[in-house]
Image (cartoon, rainbow, N blue to C red):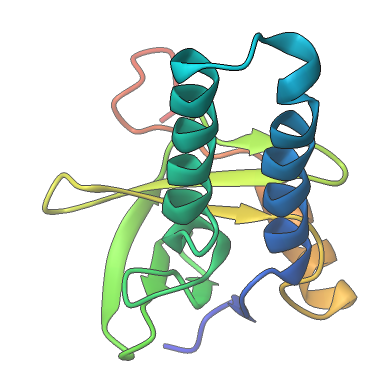
Amino acid sequence: MSPALDVPLKSSALAHQLMFWLHVLPLALLPMAMETGAWMVGVAFAIGLSWVRVRRHAAFGFGPAAIVRIAVDADGQWSIRNPAGTRLDVALQRDSVLWSSLQILNFRGADGRRRTRVLLGDEAEADALRRLRTKLAAGVQDPSDSKAAP
C-alpha cells in the first residue's frame, strides 16, 4: 500500500544556526553577568559542553538516529525511516507540538522508545511540510483514549 503522505526530510540548517546563537550569546554576555573566576570558567565550560551535545542532534536531522522520512498510510498508520533506510512503524504522541513555524513531533515505536523530530521549515519542500502540518492539525485519535469515538 502506498503512503497517503510521504515527506523526505533533510537536516535543518536553521536549527543549527539557532542552536549556535543560543549558545554564543550567553557565552558573550557571561563576562557582564559574573565575576571572573572559577565559577565563570565552569559556566563557560557548561555552555560549550551543551553546544557540543546539541549542535548535531538527531532531533534536528543529524546522525544515524535521525528521522529522515515521515510517512502516513491511508489507514492513518505513521512510519519513520532513519538514514540507513530502516522503516519503523510508530504512533504519533499527543504531546507533539504544532505551531505555525515550529513542529516538535514525538513518536513512540513498538519497542517503547521515544523518537523526536523538530521541524523549523527548512527540512523539506514547502508543499510537503504544508501537507504534513495539515495532517497533524487534523489530530491523532488515541485508541487508548476511553472518550475516543469508535
